[in-house]
Length: 195
Image (tube, rainbow, N blue to C red; front, side, top):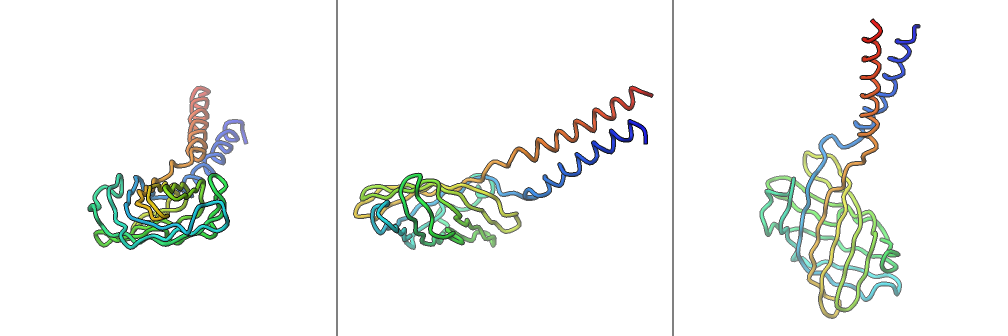
């Protein structure tokens, strides 16, 4: 086997893993954001043990971007309760919430599974949370996403805004594919230059 064939073989072996990495990413990822509004009640201030958040039945979709852009304002959404321990960046979800929110519009189902908190705090006049999970939509692959929820109220009853955003795709797979393609181009260039 001559030197050119070895170079071509090595570049091909590097490209195959790069494309297999890309294929592992969602083929039809969800893009955009979904915003909701409604009420919730906290069992008490965070940091003193287990704190539970109970959502009212009045939650509705407000506005969206990307996949959610055509969904009518006021579409009813169902929210499931969750519990956590700790406070602030030490807040820990007691169990994943599958799903945290869900709704149907135009015959399509949309939902978000909450898998972890990155921050959580409740007190008598305010509540705020951030976290991560997975978005689902009819015809789309499950897509990693983040959420934020905040609001104000009295006696641990709050009016809240909730936003779920899709995460930015991991750049390492794209970089690996780019490197493999660049290497293949370099091999082709040097191969033509020799002849």
